[in-house]
Amino acid sequence: MPKFSLDTNVLISHFNQLRPLDGKGENEAEQWARSLTSNRETNAILSPVEVEFLCGVVNRHEMRLREAYLRAFEVVDDHKTLFRKGRRSIS
Image (tube, rainbow, N blue to C red):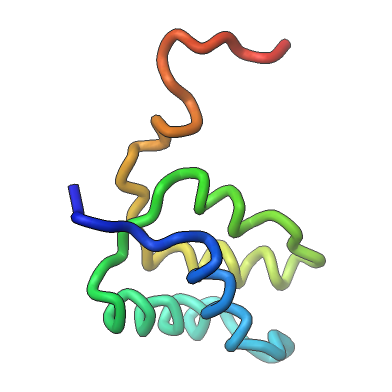
């Protein structure tokens, strides 16, 4: 497990520097994210960061770019931060 992981505000702030999104593609978004992981020397995030980063998307194009951006990161908690064994599900 890495010593530290990136927080939502870091990803959102960095992603927003890619704007305007018109004309940008998924490869460009992923490469933009890799520049962050290289600069910060980690690609680690936790599952809540992944979920929060996808919130507030306004259209399909932005969703595709955000999903591509996330490919550069590794969710290091195996999504166990959100879904732990023994918790009741909402039905």
